[in-house]
Amino acid sequence: MIWLAVYLPQGALQYQRFCHGIAIEIPMAFYDPQQLTILAVDTVDVSVDASIEVGLSVATAQALCANLVLIEYQPSLSEQYIDWLAKWSYNYSARVVVPHCELQSKQSGLLRKVPDVLLLEVGSMAQIFSGVANLLRQYAKQASDYGFRWQMQLAEHPLVAQLLAVYQPQLTYLSESGSLQEGAYQLSEASTHQETLAELPISALPVENAVMVRCQQMGVTSIGKLLALPHGELGKRFGEALLMRLGQLQGRIEMPQCFYVPAETYQQKLSLMYDVEHIEGILFPLSRMLAQLSDYLVQRQLAILQLQLTLVYRSHEFAPLLLTIHYPFAEHRSDNLLALCRLQLERQTLYSPLVALQLDVDDFVSQQIDESSWWQEQGITTEIRQLFATLEARLGEGCVKSLRLANHHLPESSYQLKPLTEWGQTRHQHTLSDLSHKTAGVFYHRLAAEGAAINGALGLFRPSFLLPTPQKVTSKEITRLKGPERISPPWWLAQADRDYYVAAHCDGGLCWVFYDGQANYIQGWFS
Image (cartoon, rainbow, N blue to C red; front, side, top):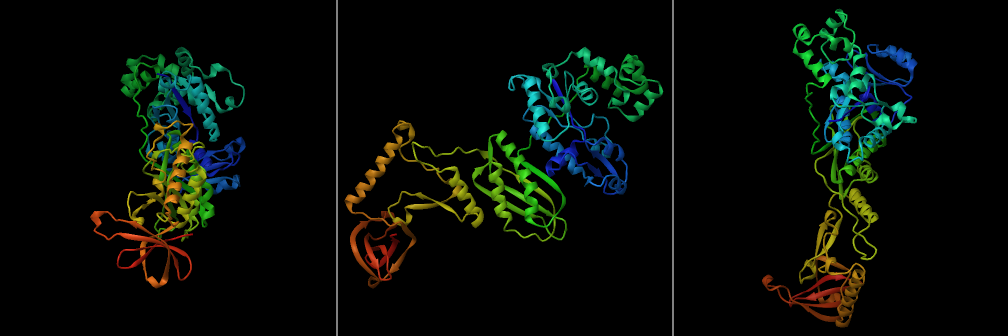
């Protein structure tokens, strides 16, 4: 196997920078909300980085750097970052090992992993990306586009790749910005890796602190010196755990991995850096969240019919505001996703400042292809779909319907109202498989012309507006002008035959009426 290790120092902080659109020049820091001390710092200014240290009080850090952006650290922030990182890294490898966030590891006491290093098995993906080098280029470009400062290393063993990515990386974001030789993307010899590892300090090994301290007390300060000692004596003195770690480092023992498994649903949370009191204040962070959702859908050729947007209030007196956004035409583009969300949000009233947003999608569908074609002149265009979706978002779900013909003799039953999601699903009885692509449009035009000619020859007139239910009218209110035309209901309805007439109404207007032997009814109106 060929493993790619990606070291992302302060990745959780850099993810917050990306989500909130904070410029890279502005320093950021996580702080402990209970002790009010600095937990992590992310800055490109060396002077600021040196002045603000981990453990410093929040008040002192703000005094040293006035433009420092402080974010209250919660374990959920690390979980959100790891989940997001694994989702887009999964596009480059089917075997992704999520990193252990250093902040989360310190709080839980689990320090036996190399922190902030993502692992991807890339040897099996070489043919898909036309080589491992091309995969690294694409991954490096996307990581840089997200604003991450990364370090990468290729190796045959996962622990070797992790340690070298942190201390002696093969590829960094600084080298990527300039000219880089082709060899930087290739796998180095295993002997070269072992020589580099031998020079690393003993503190680089992910072992217990007690073991590290005892090694240093013995004068063993580098990994090379530790590997030179007899393994039997090391096992007696330090136990099997250290021997297993050394065996993984040398490739003699396989390192078990827990691979990332994508969830069947999509969820994304975002804690706002400031209280939002107006709807306009959440549009920018929401647009970034929807852009990430759009990338997720495009890469998997999926779309959504609805999503749930949760707005969390600062005051616990108010329950979170839950909004269900419907997309009748299976949407996947970020602009259209945001447009309908914005229409729904404009009708909402905020009863308390907002502190968090959450997106949830439970079901996915395949992306729809535009049915319109120049030679067939059927289907609806993308612009019409957007118009219908906007109308439904403004008026409410189910307020906009599509019409569909029904096989029934009675006019009031000859059509059906269907939701927009079923628009365009009906097909003409003559399928395209029976026709040539070049003559299909001509054929359909000829059918329409023949139908109009037959109706005209028979003297049949149909109104453009039909009433859902025929309206009873007296004979004094109408004046028959043309007819009759008899329509017989199906026999199983046990209804009388209808004689239809074109009539003038006493209040003005031309109507279509019928007489069933007992009374007159208005069926529809002519435009």
